Length: 119
Image (cartoon, rainbow, N blue to C red):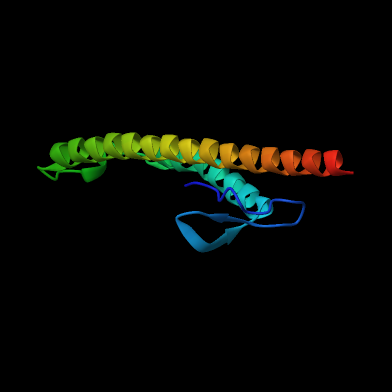
């Protein structure tokens, strides 16, 4: 994603994305998205913590009880890995959104300094 270099970024103005000129966003919307993503980045891996595998005795005399428990353990391990990876991806998105915010703030600062020089 590249922010349009000719987009106005003064206080309250909105920026556009070069590849998608009809997409308009403001710093408040990006900050809201970043906050939501950061929250999910912590929540998603924790989902695996609530998965508990019952002991084989819970299946009583069922002959395949041991196999079922083994399969459930494998499923729980796979979910833990996938949910952890999802959390890491969301952390990357959080860092990316934070970088976008810093660029927009820098552009705002540059615009303000340019105005100061004109006056």
